[in-house]
Amino acid sequence: MDFEELSKHYMEKYNELTEKRDNSGIINTIEDINEAILGSNMERVNDDYCKILDWNFYVANIEGARIALNAQFSFLHLPSAMLFSIAFDEDEKKWKFNAEIK
Image (cartoon, rainbow, N blue to C red):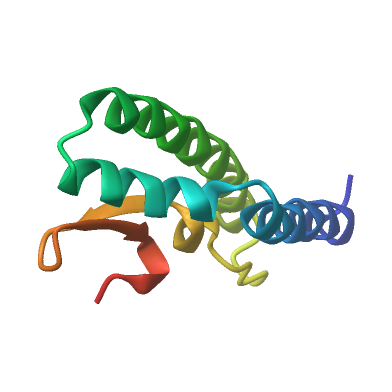
């Protein structure tokens, strides 16, 4: 495959990621884990945390492809999927998408 096909394939995966973020329920999972933490509901926290781990693994696989492509074709400047990973915001003490953490 040439770099155009590879970058097109990456962008398809990136666009699928944005759609999956909006349609998969992961946004609700983030809200739910934050509520569960406040309510000390450890069963819900653990369930939601597992969903977040699965989500972050999915995002990391896409990001790994971007890193590999950028290493080989540095002129591509592909967008990072890591904006869609979920992390704990230490300042606000809440789970959020990385793009929302300042």
